[in-house]
Image (cartoon, rainbow, N blue to C red; front, side, top):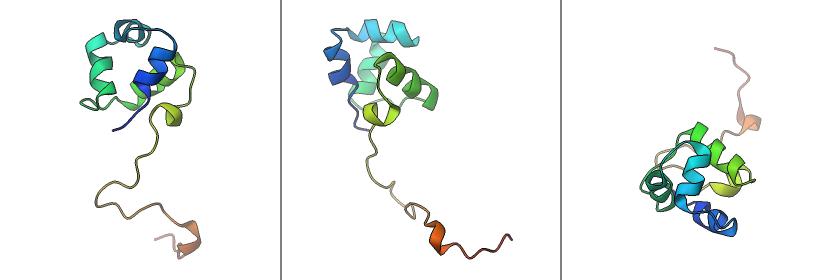
Length: 83
């Protein structure tokens, strides 16, 4: 997963350990997130975004549709059935 954690962290002149301490993980975890080797939980992604004064989408931008997904739901094509 591509993200902007490194760029945003460096703008604040924080080390990986600095950001990790702010969100309750190790600097190694932050490094793994930055390189895409580790996908953060929703809670951790939110905490990182808050620490960096950004929205979750600014830190972890959408990467397109997941393989095998049917894409976003189009409410205009709903049949209206509640079954």
